[in-house]
Amino acid sequence: MTDPVHGLSDKALAVFAFAAYHQLESGQRVSKVVQRDDSGHRADADAVHELSLREFVRADGEHIHFTEEGERVLQAVIGELRRTVGAG
Image (cartoon, rainbow, N blue to C red; front, side, top):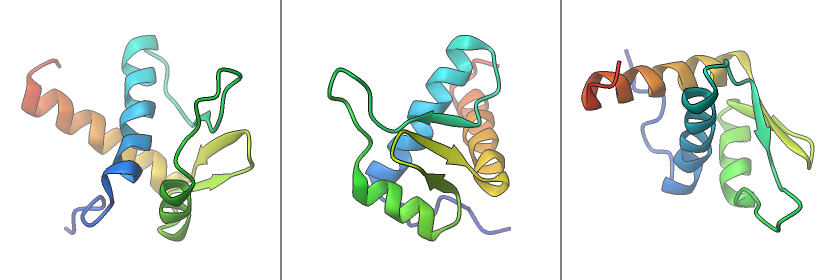
């Protein structure tokens, strides 16, 4: 099986890291994250574009919505964090 995040930029990986943080912190499954907030924080536009090209997300300017494949990858990222860090 091919590693689905192979070749992604660090900024694109950061989108998954942000979503993983929110899921782990809240205990709720994440299907979208904010693309920009009222404090001036925003996801890197190139990263969002990169993830869109890989069909992991679709973005509407306010939120980054994970596709079915993107959600699967997010769960794999979280699983790998648990496996390698031993938090799960």
